[in-house]
Length: 342
Ligand SMILES: [Zn+2]
Ligand SMILES: [Zn+2]
Image (cartoon, rainbow, N blue to C red; front, side):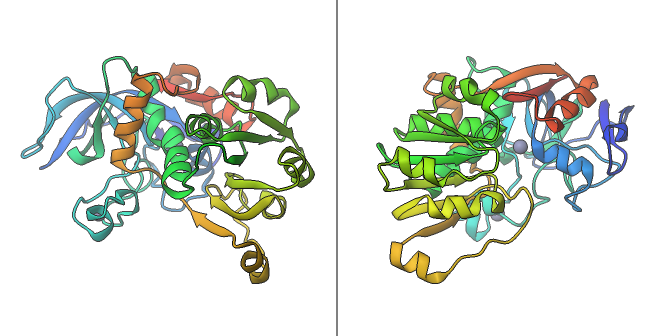
């Protein structure tokens, strides 16, 4: 098969299209002919060497959709030709988190696709059957590839972890990114009032088109005054913090009494300061969210089919154009997910 190999950590020159052996499905595995792979900012960071787990030379990419091409021994539930999306991380199905439905927290497998184990920048991937979810006929491969990571991370964090209620004010940092723009849509779908924060005034229309009720343009991430003004001085009910420490001080001061702060992203990997009295006197909640469960991916694919929510695919391009896709992500000129097709 053809695969876009990441030869080592570094710049765009590290990618090379090569002919490699097509994987053979092992017991319980399903071979998937990949049709689409979403390009995540995680992939850019992986290429640059920020995740030491990433194997090189290797195949990165974890936002995968395609067709079942072959079944390994004992692999049930699917037949050749089924259209499937991959949950971004494999799980064992029998550990404590898996049995409690928290399969996103399973530690018994190779983790996220495209790090220690091969990913989606290729024509085929072999995975265990329970990493797969069937794609409804009305949903395209490109849409389906974006659902588990970009939309799923937003949905798990806002719905299962943040427990967003109708009418609540939700502030989203990093709102124009892949997870961010889907978080805007998920928060809207959950009935919240959506306040999107962006560092770039040029992206205001894009945010409004996708469901933001209010947009705060804040190049220095000092959005406290605006957040308070928009909520009659009370502050917001939920912070969905995709940026991390860079937005922490403003996020903390923007929280209403009893508000929740959900940590989603960690762009500069720096720690945050918190005085316990601040959390005690305002009864604040600080939560972390990681990925999405298989059940949530199924739910979201159905919601996409019903057009209750839509994916934001900004561009599609062939796998051979991976350099163009990464360059566009790195320069932050892309809007919505770029999806590679093969
Ligand atoms: Zn991703
Ligand atoms: Zn498990």
